[in-house]
Amino acid sequence: MENNKLNIAKSIIANVSRIIVGLTFIFSGFVKAVDPLGFQYKIQDYLEAFGIGNWFPDIFSLLGGISLSTIEFSLGVFMLLGIRKHIATTFSLILMAFMTPLTLFIAILNPVPDCGCFGDALVVTNWQTFWKNIVLLILTYYSFRWRKSIISFISAKTDWMVSIYTILFAIFLSFYCLYYLPIFDFRPFKIGVNISDSMSIPENAKPSVYETVFTLEKDGEKKEFTIDNYPDASWTFLDAKTVLKEKGYDPTITDFSLRLQDTGEDITDSILANENYTFLLVANRLEKADDSNIDLINEIYDYAVEHGYDFYGLTSSTDELIDDWRDRTGAEYPFLLVDDIVLKTMIRSNPGLLLIKNGTIYQKWNDSSIPNEYDLKGEPLERIEVGQLEESNILRKIGVMCLWFFIPLFIILAIDFLFVRRKQLKEYLLNKKNKDLSDDKLTQ
Image 1 (cartoon, one colour):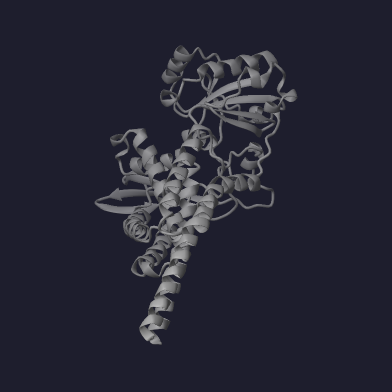
Image 2: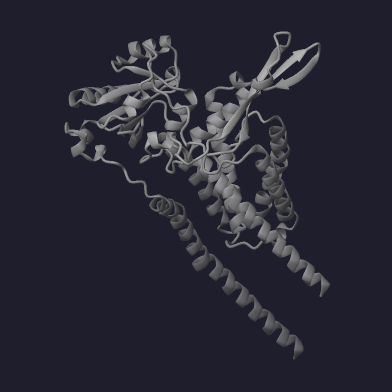
């Protein structure tokens, strides 16, 4: 009796644990898979913070991010469905055993404020990430220890089909969002967002208060000061950091400033107040920008000039690199200087194209999906679909993603139920019948 109760308790703990771990891994892997460039930027931030950013090429952080998101998503599906129990629980435990002390190290040093474990969908601090990993480590341990108690929803003969399909789905999703744009945009510069409104603070809202703390040294003594008690020149400056003193309302878009390359004049307000259409070609680093579709970009510029629309290139590159881009591509449009992080946040493409009107983002295109002459039809934007505000229906997108993943999965489950499990049931009943007949003969 006691053993039965203990086995039931183990089964409950193991199955509850694997469901929680599975759902967490699926969410974490999915939000990184739909924004592979965003996760690449986060990995690069860590590499640069530890002074090893130049050790690895960009392709390393990109493929590394796609691999990690694929592993997380796949392990999550395995855990949730109860398939590949030994592999899923073992690798989940290894992953959490590695990530937990790593996130503790990151939380202590705090080289990057946001760990990026849930992408831009859910921003958590480094310490929150560490405590989350502590919980997941405990849950993965119990899932691994009592993995034989995990209930599987798919037979062992077809779980390999689900395994392969899950891995291929995660990889395909990452490369699809890399080639086009993230299916789900969790960043401030979404289609339909008014940039001016997102930069402003409501009248009754209280802004956050920040304070700059200076670290100085004198006679071997290090001490922190603020601007109010900054000491005399006998102290040697070591470091400065800005800390949050009082939490208040923070605009969703900050540090958005558009300055003309030639004069340095800030024309942000005039561009955002323009009631006509404006094209913004975003290329955070021109030296790394893909120029394979430059003919389409130049055609868009010619179209904008013909119809009286403004067209600007946005970059954080130097004047020399801008001149080199003009020489290589024949670009005639003016350039605006913008913060590199803001440009990466605006669009996950280098280059990428935005269409705004009166400060509102109407469209966003990856360089591989820029509209061509057939899309534009030589007509003004007011008359064609390209110039209309794209409606972002989040529920529709979720529905489409579910269909993408679950319809093939349900087909596999149907095959498993109609053929494999029915065959196993028939064999079980036949064996049971033969055993009963054998027992009857022995009795006689």
